[in-house]
Length: 262
Image (cartoon, rainbow, N blue to C red):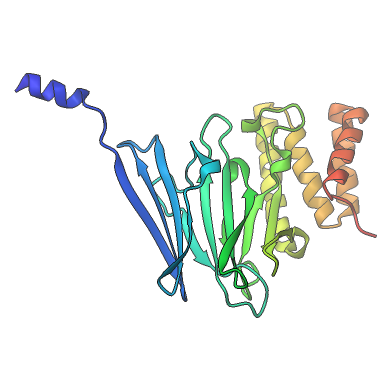
């Protein structure tokens, strides 16, 4: 019995096949994969999209070998939901994937139907360490994609894991393109600004590098077109880290569309 128990303990973990599904209207999607017992390895990722029961797309996701399901086998990684323009009732398929690793990142594939060719095309969104959420922020029309600005990650001489990023919100247009809509949701920006200010106080207490959190505060203030608040933040940045860093940060923000509006 002892020998049998030992052999059982040494036996390789049994792979577990799993399929996640979702549907809306005539569209259904199934995402299947195989995971090891403790869900630290995933393989055989495959997405199938059907319309009225007929398969329209089958993809084994060849570019994402080594990725994990976005839900990591614990929550669903696939969702069928309407994302784009007013008057368009056609739902999209959203598949989230996770890269793993020390600088782990979440990506998503947004599949839009093309009736002329009876197929789906995908656009990829990269959402960094903090991922994304689908939220109907204005409680009307299609949902928004609530995320953070991944362009801040790894910037300012800080490791990715220490990066603070401001909020970034996307909407999908009728052409299936993700557009930055952050300025259209000032309440979310103000909410993020409050959070960044709490982060700043925590960084002060920890005597940690504050470059990233100050950059996020400045970004939110610019999105809110708060000229006075932005000037105050940059004065603090200049005092703490010098005018040269302040100049580089201003250029960094401007190149990424963070500009005060007249």
